[in-house]
Image 1 (cartoon, rainbow over the protein chains, first blue to last red):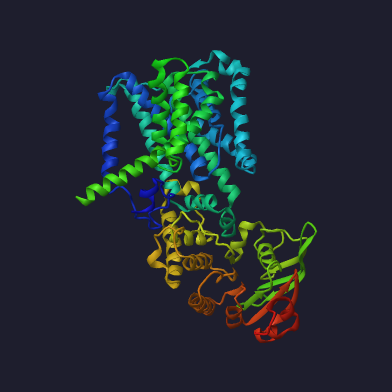
Image 2 (tube, rainbow over the protein chains, first blue to last red):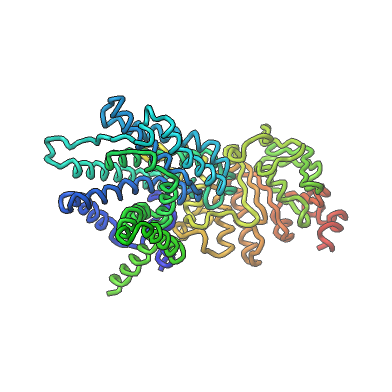
Length: 340
Length: 253
């Protein structure tokens, strides 16, 4: 039994080139293919509300992919990703609304802006480490809603702005929500592939080395500050992209959608999903979307209570997150099948 | 000269860890650095790898100043070290550990990692070849895909040397490479280090308390005591030096 099976903890991404051939689950390609087919079939099988929920799962999944770069790969804590999400959400609201730019511009534009903001904030913030970074990013998250309200002429103030989403082209014969789901799915797939490539490369190894033993990494020529700053900027870029998708899916942005709570819930979802696992963001996003929705019926305060309990349970019982549990289960199933 | 140190002084508060140390290492020399605990041996390494900033003194490597260099450029200059208490990346595989040693031979960053152009994939293969070559030489290839955290102590020490060699250094600093090893392993290690030294011609400075190991391996031995150099010469001379016997060895072995 290898270590991943025993503890449910995934080894850090290492790359095919480096020769990592060990695996817990023997049919990764088949599983991925089945998942891909299922994901593409979703908008044609489920009712519009479910499609909307799953679209939100993918949107949060993209944000969590980025947050995992900071939490899982660098071992740092960011409490400010809601701010990058807000930035990304206001880009289509302002750019395609008042400025009249076409829809396809919004996505690269918010990616670029969020990357730039992440870089600018990352430069000073990552000199500060651990709890200091958490406090600085928390400050950013606190500051964003009032700033949005202050510049009401552009942002619509506390009233918010409505956002028009790209509508389905007529040749496709799809409804707008189906089209949007597929668009978000495509972005999420590209985002996922990019993270996989990143972590399986020289830069990914350097990130892992910095997390495992910064002193040794530095002596070997790994530039710690540059890597930490860049990975923070990439992470911010993912959050920005997720913000734009969010605005398209929800169709409305307001400062109250991007309070500190969002940043904290994102961090909690990253930890619950499994911060150093490729499945973690998806599981975290499912948690973020469905647990509050499921608890909604029981009363106003219940969703928060249930989410909090789930977070405590997961952190105590499965430190590697839901992805870790899944990995242990996969190992057990694979072993049983292998024996028979 | 590979390494020239003039008047290196380090203080921690009121304690003087190194006071006015002079040391030169010629190209391809194998120098032993001995002395009681707290003599300043590791502090000297830390200064050379820029983990600690000396109060005064000059350090030159291949006629270029090391003072003021950021720590992450040390490997680029051709200096590698191992750590007294193992500095491996336990959750990465043995090969990955060594590939990070080869980090300075590549240049691909985040953008190339995501887009995977041809030159980046060739570079990854090259880094892997460098790692595998070193692993082969150190007899570690069978363990290449094993996580580096769960292996015997002697093997870990060996991996750390392999990782330092992947830097392809011209100066190798070994901090207590055989501490905690059995007698057989010590003999084996001496042989490995001698082979590496003979093949690559790298200058090596080795800190070690195992006197047999140092005296057999090194061409020259330097003894530090309380931050001062008290002896510098051939193993035979240093072994009988009264100051060294008094401060460190106790009896003439």
